[in-house]
Image (tube, rainbow, N blue to C red; front, top):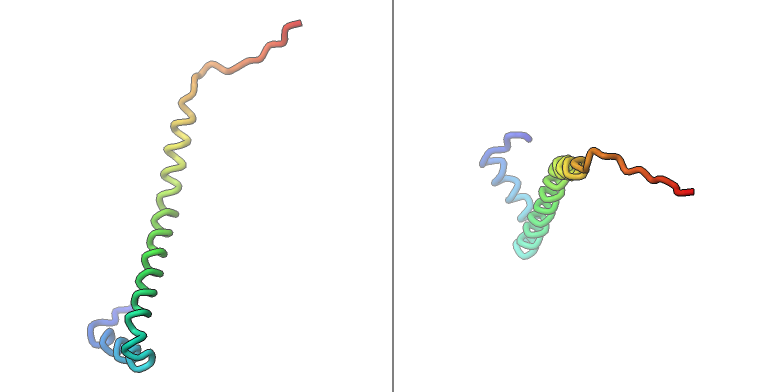
Length: 74
């Protein structure tokens, strides 16, 4: 990510204030925050899924070593 710094951040906020107005800015900030939260949540779920699948595989792999056989009686 680019290093914006404090002066750049202030400039972006002033431009957003001029474009959207003071009444609309809190709504836009809230929507942006919720979107960012959902994005981070989805990213964390995607990262943790392979670990969960590995744990599930280990638990299902611990079955008995004796193979099941089906014998037909004639």
